[in-house]
Length: 323
Image (cartoon, rainbow, N blue to C red):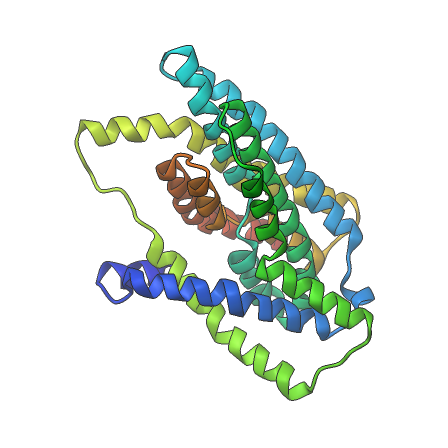
């Protein structure tokens, strides 16, 4: 990520490249990774229902906490008219809650698991990521649709169906469901084809990290207007970063340890829970007309600070002998 940031600053990673790289990762590389990983082992060996329920339960809990916390915090902002506050804060609460619970599992989470535990973790992590991602998408649509309803905005029925259709046609979900179907039917693909897929994924995942780093845009020093703008975003950002980088991973690891998980599975829970805010949250927020600046700041600062929080977490867990 730091290399990507440096390359972008000297003009070696232009915006047009980042767009193509992101499309390649989302539509080809990640679905292929999940498809190949699940097919390599029987479905019964990679399905971890307890871990899935744990991560999903914590995600819903963080979602509820973020909604309550952000509502209270936004009430304490600068005083405005009651109507304006109701209309703006509905989308602001949705944006903050999504940034708090939605992690970048597809790139950061999977890559950290791969680097820490090798290819042995990919089947379990890929299926776990796909199932949790379904919940992420459903909660995101729910919270923003609720915000739109609170604002009194009329949306045609076909737009609501289109949102849910986009979730069902998500490449990651389609790849996972297809692989689960083939695995359940005990259909085996040629070894050469599986090996080619693994080789392709091996070089595209580091490229995705470069793209994330290149997309980071740190604010330059400015005048009073910029300082005031930064101060306005401080409270929502504190909520997002506290829940995303501290509360969620701490709770997830504690429950996983209490349930008896150690080593690779505990590490997978930690990496998934501690992953920074997903870039997809910006796309969803923009589609619903939420504050794009706040959505971008949540991604940037959670990605930067996760370098410290994840490193500290790995150091502590390995020091305790849990991972």
